[in-house]
Image (tube, rainbow, N blue to C red; front, side, top):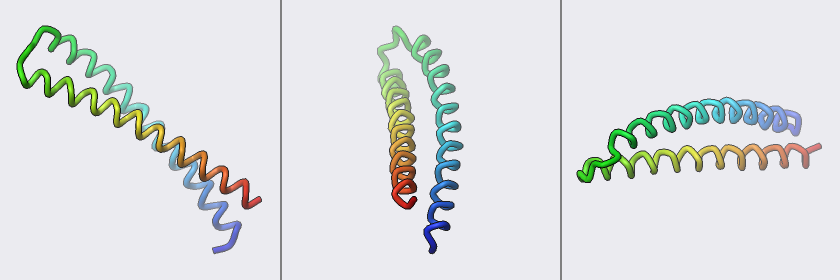
Length: 86
């Protein structure tokens, strides 16, 4: 693979990561809205199922945050490598 091909592949990967970020941000926004409604509904519930639902929502929100962080790191590393190639 030539340097030009590597740079092109890195550029394409950067664009795909942008698309992924947009998708995950949309999922995060929907999750925030839904979890807000669910948490309001579950506010006074002490049932085990309510606690499980609260934990599942918190876990999902954390996963969205971690995924966005991983996308940013991948883009930063790819862009740094592309700059090294010239």
